[in-house]
Length: 338
Image (cartoon, rainbow, N blue to C red):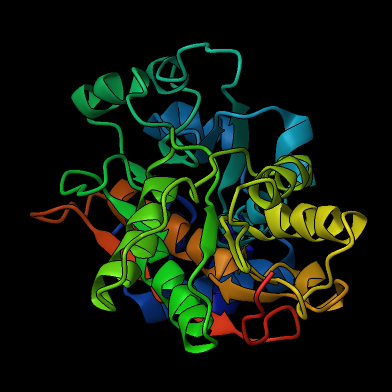
């Protein structure tokens, strides 16, 4: 059985230093931490987490809170990619991941109060979530992969530039001559969706163009919602010549509905998605979409949380905004009059 002494011998560091790395304490340089972790991996050392938690009062477990059902989460590539990034960082730092689905309105602040985890990562938290006050008051280390308000200055977060991303999509469509552009942003209960709407509105103002009325159609992040919204959009008195969607699943459903109604994509109507999930390049036609690096978002969120858990609390909240980029494929083309 591999022991901590074996790790110390192979790494060349003392048992005390190895213990600090295993317990994720801050008094270790990044270079030392990396060498010790390499020795741990090479030897296959498995720390006794139960004994360790009794000694230091830590569980070496991070809770990930997502207020949705398992069916929804594991069907949506956004969540699986963020979770993959989180899991890889936690595993490399000898931490466990506890996934907590809060869709049944059970107060998730209890997870930390009951000492089941040492820190939290919050994903897709709706506006006005009553749990946030308790989390803030408790002093629990936590990081969000979303913003809590549109102008959030109080929370540690890692998020994508949704406003800038939609602006990029709008610039592309406007350059192709589209002036009847509908936005299918997702549910307005999420700040990320309101930020998408802000990008849509900014683009009209930037070009000094009047925003068309009735062209923002709220729905859910699903293909089923995209299908229904596309039907609704094309039933408007002056149907749009382009759709910009809150995510790629909405776009997939919209394209299917358009085909069923006899419209050609992109010859008759252009469609843009958001996220650039793996299926986007294999859709028919391959989807023009705004790319956000969801895997990187998960990694940075986990790294930021581990830093906070080691006691390195910044004087102001750590807020990281990740760039987006427009990936142009074959679902957009110059505007045609319908």
